[in-house]
Image 1 (tube, rainbow, N blue to C red):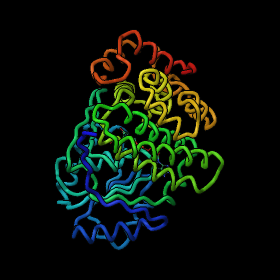
Image 2 (cartoon, helix red, strand yellow):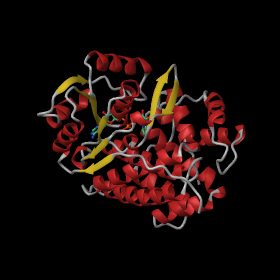
Image 3 (tube, helix red, strand yellow):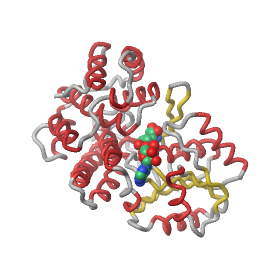
Image 4 (cartoon, rainbow, N blue to C red):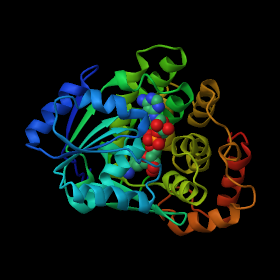
Length: 349
Ligand code: NAD
């Protein structure tokens, strides 16, 4: 046993039905008086409800997936103009991503109230997109100082979005198992996260309200494992596709994950065993494919809007960023085959 593991500092509260009080308490602890609230128009009413009684200097609702640079610039300019001293983000990974873009330049603390299972709130990774290319970086200032999980806020997720987002969280876990900096703590967190996500997704599928708590718990652990282990091949692929074709984030992860698991499993038997055990199944790949089918997850990149004639361009970009430590060495041929199968929705088995 020889490894280094960095645990990132943040307060994490699970407060079903209690996000409003928890946000006010965090703002008081921070001593902030000029709060910026980032929430898309969908969440404006919710944001006003949760921030009742808090001094809000700026309500900002321009939230766009993958954080285009011009959108970030406008948010940063507004933050500067209003001299803000904290950001509260309410919403999915896109709202968190915009808050991170603001924190990156202003260095103000973030309080995050996630409403999806994207897990960005548990990472110190920021992302910005310009001219079809997504750039990411790591900075301690973008790690929210506090995260408030309130499962009553995710119950409004449309079923297909909840399922895709839960599979996005599952992808953080699976990809962490072979990511460049993976250590035994990441693996333990991933295994527990996969168990909770599997159980939450099945509960959601069965219409049980109990699934949301498991899914948020799993999403948090998944984000922690992912930020420690780093991006594996799966994230590199989704990152290239998301930036190049502006594909929906969670759904892209849901489509690509079974293909990457099938690609790596033969050369990563321990990882495959960990996935299978978390699912209480005999074999990881069929178990994941069956889960995706059962949940009615999206099956092809084509249905998400990826054009048919762009595979070669995507392959070039994936090869440029694929981790050298990936269990199955990448080649033009095998990544072309993987992306073609994901584009067309072939059965990864
Ligand atoms: P999102 O935030 O864009 O949300 C997807 C859709 O769901 C939006 O239309 C949103 O309005 C809606 N929505 C969100 N919560 C809802 C709720 N409770 N009820 C009803 N509708 C709801 O998408 P996402 O998948 O949460 O996040 C994707 C973004 O997060 C991407 O840009 C991705 O790169 C980023 N991300 C970053 C990290 C990181 O570590 N930096 C990690 C994961 C994701």
